Length: 460
Image (cartoon, rainbow, N blue to C red):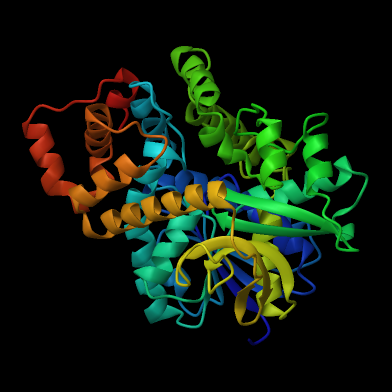
C-alpha cells in the first residue's frame, strides 16, 4: 500500500466513533492515515455532524494532520478506500427496542444479538452489508472490510458466503475485555499468558496457559468467583455454575449466561421490562447515548469521555485499530477475530466463519488451530452455527419457512405457536427494513396481526 491510508467508517455517526479515533491517533506512527471518511444515512445526519466535529477536534489536538470528511453518500466515500469499517445499526436504537420488547412481552428472552432479537438484527443487517460489498467490488476492490456491526459472526459469515468477499475480518470487544481483566486475577499480565479462543461470535469459549505451557484456566475459574470477572457492562452478571466450568475447563464468554443460566437471565430481563423507570437494555442505552451526544457537542471536548465505557462495546477500538495496523504493517499480531474456519475448529465446516485466535498480517487472518470440543460444547456450537446459517439464508432469500426453522432451532426461543406469534410481530414491527419479506408481511397484516407490546407498537 502507498503512504497515506484512506479509512472509511460506515455508521460514522455512532457514539463509538471517538473510541475509533483514539485508537487511530495512538497508532498513527505505524498506520499513517491521510484521510478518514465518516458515512451515515439521512436519519443519522445530526449525530454524524456532532460526532464528526468531535472526531476532527481529536485529530486537531493530536500532532497529526488528518482531515475527517462527513458524507451521506456512501459511494463518494468508498472510492479508493484502503480500509472500510462498519459499525451501523439498521433501524437505529428504536429497532433494538422492538427486538427486546416484543419477545419479552411473551416471556421470551429479548436481546440484541441472541434469541429472536438477534435473528431479526441479522435479517435487517445482512442485505445492507451485502449492498456495501457490491459497492466495494466496484469502487475499492483492494480494500479490507473490518466489521463490528452486530451480530458480527452472522454478518461476517454472510459477507464471505453470499457476498463472495474474502478480504473481511469480523471483530468483537468481548475477547478484548476478557484478556484485559483475567490476567490480574492470578497476578499475571497479558504478556505472561497464552489465550486460545474458539467458537462463534458471542458464543465462544477460551482456555489459558502460562509461558511454560501449564494450563491456568482452572486457576482463573476459581478467581472468577472472588473478584471482578470482566463481564461486559451490558450483560447482567449471574455467576455460572462452578462445577460446569470446572468440568469443561474452559471459560465461556459472557453471553453464554443466556443459555447456561436462562431462567435467571430471563427473570432479570422481565423485571427491567416491567419497570417503566428502568426499561430494557435498549431503552437504557438510548439514555446513555443521549448523554454522550450532549458531551460531544462541547466545543472544548477533544478526547474520548469516560462515560463511553458504559456502552456495551467499550475497548473495541483496540481490536479494530490494531487489526487494521496489523494488516497494513504485516505485524502478525495475535487477535481474536471472526474469520473463515479453514480447519481451526474441527467441529465446524472449513468454510464456516468462526471466532478464533488468529495471527493478523497483510494476508488477513490466519486462524490458530484449536481442535475439537467435548460433546457438551460441540453440541451447543453445532446447533448455534446451523441456526445462524438458517437465519443468514432467510435474510438473503426472504423465505419465511427458513426463518421459522431458525426460530425453532434457537435455544432461547421456546418452539410452538408463541414462537411463530413473536416472529410474525417482529416482521410487522420491522416492516420498513425487511423488503425481502414484504409479501409475507402484507399477508400477516391482512390477517390482522398486531404487536401486543404498546411501546413497541407505537415506535416508528
